[in-house]
Amino acid sequence: MIQRIRASEYREQPWKNGGGLTREIAVALSDEREPRVLWRLSLATIERDGPFSEFRGYDRSIVTIDGGPLELEVEGQRVSLERAEPYSFPGEARVAASLQTPARDLNVMTLRDGFVHDLEIVTSAQRFVVDDDELIFIFAIEGTASLAEASCDRGDTLWLRSNETIEVRTTGYAAVVRITPV
Image 1 (cartoon, one colour):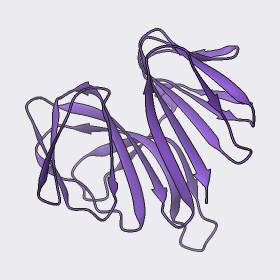
Image 2 (cartoon, rainbow, N blue to C red):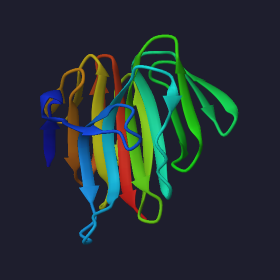
Image 3 (tube, rainbow, N blue to C red):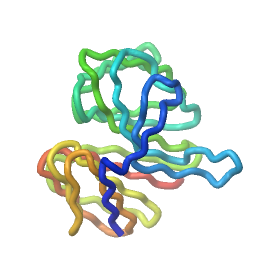
Image 4 (cartoon, helix red, strand yellow):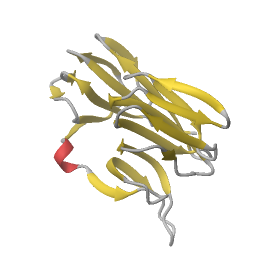
């Protein structure tokens, strides 16, 4: 089953540190009395220098989709991210951003004890073998992205729940996010 999620359907949520807003593309919550995020795919606009929120016990990945370059300081180490260049880090790491211009990034986070994720950029047709319990998201960074009979435009997302080999095609850049239970 393939679901198209349009950018107009993303839900705005405040950042954990109060420094801005994130636009949730998809999220899974635990069924506990105080629900925890199990995994989340979202967009954030970074408009000024400052720290990232801490998410202890999570693994995170980001990729700049607009603006940049994005300069990070991660646990005292400088990291420079160009557009469409993924970067992963533990959620408890001390991370601060500094900008030359505002940037928007795609964010993936997974609860380390329950899930793993992978974020890959594709620029041409690419095949993926999908596990039975794996979730696949295709985010169109530039141009269009397509999968089987479904396609999405820049800024939109395709969500696949299937256990087959798939071929992702794009006319520009697309982020392929794979989330798998451990």
